[in-house]
Length: 298
View 1 (cartoon, rainbow, N blue to C red):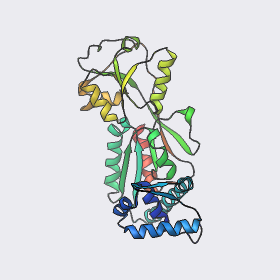
View 2: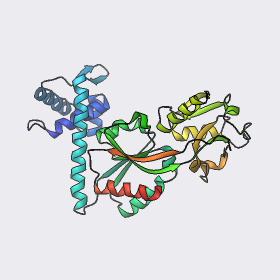
View 3: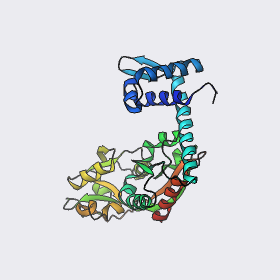
View 4: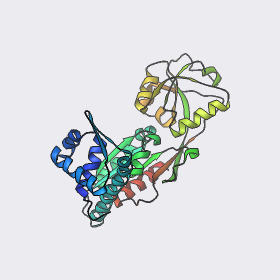
């Protein structure tokens, strides 16, 4: 990094880029709007390029600004990791661990991991993002997430990330108790029903999409749920059909209203991986959190 580039300039730039306006970034950072504007103007002069296009509703990144944002975000994330690594190695605790988890992991393994981690390191803050890998790739690349426990599609492998297999889980077609198709025994018998599924961009659900295609089937997916809870709640309280992990069906609360169908054609198992950047070492606290996930996944 050029000696003339200042950390406060990078922080001002990334805050404004993420918020889309100087006013919103000011509220988030606690800095005045004039201070943020000055820092960004100094940064633009130093780089010799415009980073933002100013509009009435806020600001948008230029092409150069968008490219610089990726680098600046990673620089700041690496500095945070380096600072926390030193503090944690000195036994001072504190810092923050940022993780992503798939929906079924969030309802089963994650609470046990977080509970144990918090008992041992109560001063460390933990941020948890729930969703499929497709929604987390950007934050993983930028260093905003330390790692995620999720499935991934090997045909769309991201070369910046590394993948460590930690567990596999069985998935089944699920309906509410008392559903008219509760006794169905084949996927063909369900084809005309109304389905709800997480986004097909998700890794495991892309695999299911391909599986249906190979069998010449096209389930009528009329509702796409971006969150696991929305999908589960819809199935439990309607005639929609979905595909969920058996861990969810076995859950004493969530599974109370659900029935897993016994079909002649078994669904492929979902393989979960611990996924992180290739070129970024985890802090001691993040590394311990990853170790807990490995332990509870097996």
